[in-house]
Amino acid sequence: MKPGTQIIYVPTHAENDKSHQDCETGFVTSIHKNGEAAFCRYWKHRNGHGGMLRTVSCSELTPLDMLVVENTVLQHVVEKALNEIAKEQTE
Image 1 (cartoon, rainbow, N blue to C red):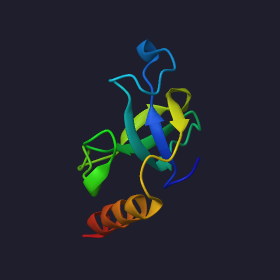
Image 2: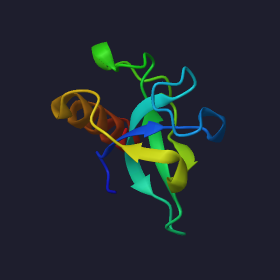
Image 3: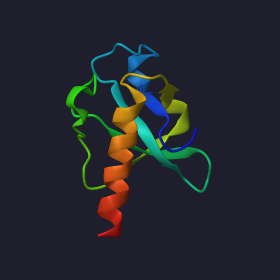
């Protein structure tokens, strides 16, 4: 996993069902220094359409074992979001 990797957060109670209503789609912004978790941003809507992030102020630390790598939007949507995040961090 690396920044820009698209993921689905699957909570334990979803029992590995990626279609469970509590799953969230998003992407990795960085890997935690312990290597066991990633900082992620999640889309406001499950399918990520419109490129609106649910988490706009910061990334959320998520255990890697709760993430499934899967593309859910076109990669350019993720790249645009990453560029906007980088721009905000430099302002």
